[in-house]
Length: 305
Image (cartoon, rainbow, N blue to C red; front, top):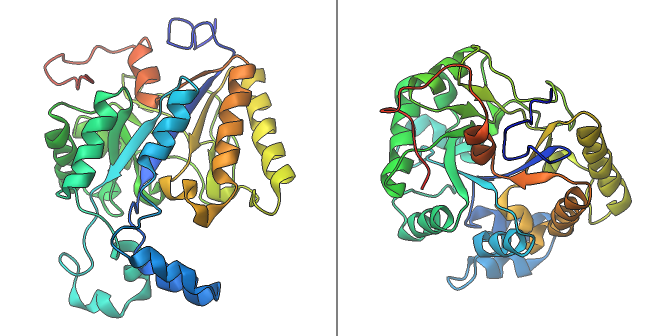
């Protein structure tokens, strides 16, 4: 008996779960960085108020809609370098990388796109901040802010930078009401590093979906298209052979022109998976369709609308 039996992927060869961690929907200091490193002053044009190449929500939604699929979007509620962090962090380059140039969940444009995604059938979840994987109260606050925007509960999410202490992070996620985690994975390598099926660390309704591949771990498709595609096709084949849940993470900025080739690779990945008989969709949809061994209190179960 396959674990896929009885799920939304019941008749499929395998499951391909699509997800996007929303880290930086605005191109800010990167414009100056690329202008200097690429010696291309055209990047500075992206600082103009009518330009925002990293705001790719509609672009990704069109791609997925045209293929008849949906995905999970995890939104970040990160600390601000200038408002939340100690003054000493201003002299710390790593703090600038982690906390500068982020967005706010109070931004009306961000709130509007969160509601649109949810309304049109995509899953919205939590991208836990850099430190929340080890802080239950912080995690609970971040989760509640996403839910306040949506007007209903969420099912799961993924921690920023794939931060995870096993099993402590899962204990904290479960304690705040999350039903699944999509964090375990690598920022440096691709592949089925945990197992082929989602797993239950506590033998109850809390489920973990490991990341199979993050776009930045692949060969650069702009310069090494064949290598990049061969890796993706090989992973799809491995997923089909093992009736796996293949979880794919594509950051929204990788659909911009700054990352040539990644949008094409994403489209090809979806098209090939469909040809191979895969079910494709959000992790939350797959989770909700699974037969869970332990009943969850209906009063605390988040419901997607």
